[in-house]
Length: 462
Image (cartoon, rainbow, N blue to C red; front, side, top):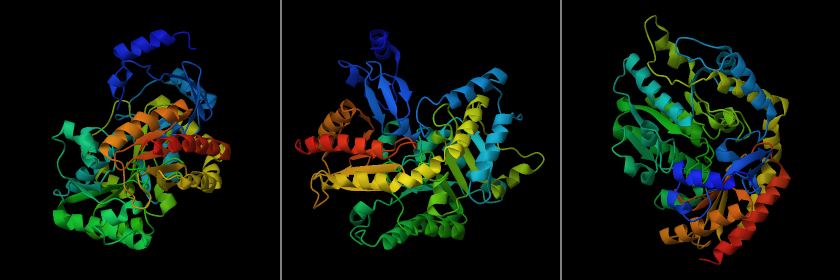
């Protein structure tokens, strides 16, 4: 037991406002308090051990307790603890920008640092609008994104987000954002209105991509600035793109002179076995937004990576991208990011994901023998397990069942059994898994065993 357990509990309830949390849920129970991490495991204030099946929040690529990253932060703090990137530079930001650009596909050579992912998305939308104004197309300002997609919580990023229930209490938001269907092949019949059932993935991918062209035409090509898409969509439970989807999207964006933004806040830095998801899936974006894994969570940092052509109007003598953040590109954060990526190379982290991803998939797919598991989908170390009432009809939970079973039982029981992951019903009910990239088959087996026990009991509650 942590010596300050009782005090921490009371102080948490009295003073700490948790994010995306029902505060009232802890009125009569303890707030989970994590005090230590080691490798793929977390330890709470009572000393209990948990397998980190979500890498914190798709963040802890190298796992917990990495002294190399702590040492990099300490060394930089002693040398230069803070300096903004407002007209000045410092070595770790320069070096990390060079390193990130060396990994980025094509001519994405310009790295604009932020404090996190939402800020990176905001920066990309502002750049798109500013770029088209400076190049003589001032009407191009609208954004297209996908239904159920999550792109952040700030006013602009939330406007691009395709989750109505997250948006309603904050409306009115920034106007001029529009939604198109996502690529959930398991629900293709519903998404296409019965036109396709998902049995032909390429046809479904072509149809889904073509809806972007329809949306651009409906809004007017002269008014649309950008399309924001995740390589593998997070919200809804890991929707990989069907074959040819992104290649068709690239053609559409080129045809209508629209920027393709690859939102890789989750998918970048090894989550799909490559530094960037666009590389894994074989498409060329105009902008990449990223964060999370760039430091493996040892310091807050994000980035917008833009193509050379997008900075050209800002290279004129008096031009300026009038945008920035006090802590964007913080010296300590960028020093940590640089050491993080060096460790990726030294420890062959990307190779570990690629070597083990098939085993991860196969281990999770064993759960398909459970009547409550309708679909297992994902790529790399990023998976969703969709839960259903009826496997034959794909009938999903009612709102009451989702509340009672997904949140009231599954989420709590997985945690009680020592697995930290995510139960989510922002689309259909799913469990999400995204372990640290250092994990291997023994960790997959542990996940499967806990999931099997909990989901078997959950089905009995339906």
